[in-house]
Image (cartoon, rainbow, N blue to C red; front, top):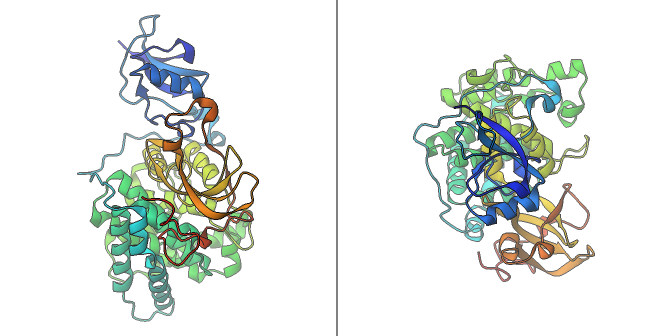
Length: 436
C-alpha cells in the first residue's frame, strides 16, 4: 500500500498522525525539520499555535487519515515554488561514516575565557601565510594548522564561543575576515553532522586557505563581489584556479586541496570553476561552500549593499535546498547554527533589543538573548540575559516573549563588542549577571 500526503486543518489532527508538511517553512517553527509523529495533545496545541493546516501521511488506498510511515517525508515549499524555477537535484541522504555524537563539554563562559584570543591568533597566522604564498616565499603551514586544531577543539567543546567571537570581532582585511568566519561556520556545521576531529581539521584548514587566490585580484573587485558586471565576474571567478596554483607545491593533503578547488561548485552544477554537480563535489567542499555562501550574505562590506540579517540568510538557504546546496547539508547547517545564529542582533516582541548568545536545537525560535536596551530602545544601565525557552516554559500564549525580528549588523545603539561575555574587565559583565 502506497503513501501520500493529505492536507488537513490543524483542529482536525489526532494523536498518532505523522505530520510531513506545514503551511509555513519548517525552520520557522520549533518542530523537527524531517517531520514528526503527534504523540500528545500538547503536540496538537503547539501545531495550532503555529499553523492553520498541515499535511499528514496517509495510505493511498483509504479515504480516512491513518497512521503511516514514509521513507523520506516531504516538507517545505515544493520545487516549482522555489529557486526561481532553477533545476533541482535530488540525491540519496548523506551518509557520514562512523559519525561522532558530540556533547558540550563546557559552558560558554568558560570556553570564552579559553578561546577569546584564538581568532586573533588565527588572523595573524593567516596573514603571514597569505603573504608568504603571494610572494612565493617558503611557506610554513604549521602555525595555521596549530591554530585550526585549537579552533576545532574549541568548537567540539562548545560551538557557540567561536561563533560569538567571529560575529563581534572586527578585521580590516575583508579576505581574512571572510576566511576566518567561513571556517567557524563550517566547523560548527561539521560538528553537527558528526565529522571526526581529523576531518574537522581538514575542513577548517581548507576554509582558511580557500580565499588565498583572492589576494591576486584587485581590492576594488573584492569589495563589490555582489555587484560585478560580466567581465568583472569572469575575472573574479579565476580566484579558485589562482589559489590552487599558489598552493600547488605546499604539501597539503588532498582533502584540504579539494576544499580550495571545490568550495564554489554548486549542487545543481551552476558553480565554478568546473561546473560539477551532486556527488562529484567532495563532502568537505560542499560544507565549505555552504558556509562561505552564508558568510557572504551576512558579512559587512565597505562599499556594497547592506548585508542580510542572519534570519533572512537562513531562510534563503532553506529555499535553495537541492538547488545550489544539498538538502541534508542545509538542514544540518540550520540545526547547527539555529534560526537566529549566535551573534544575531534581535528585537523582542516587547521592544527590548539585544544579541543572541546561544541557542538550543530543541527550541530554535527561543534562544538565549543578552539584552542591551529596554523596550523603548534606551541603553540598559546593566546588561541582562534572558533564556526565552525557560522564560516561556509555563506562560500562557499571550504572555510569551519571543523574537519579533532580526536586526541588521551595525544597528545604532547595539554594539556587542562593549559587552564582556567572560565576566572580566567590563561594567557590562555577564559573569555577575547570570550563571551558565
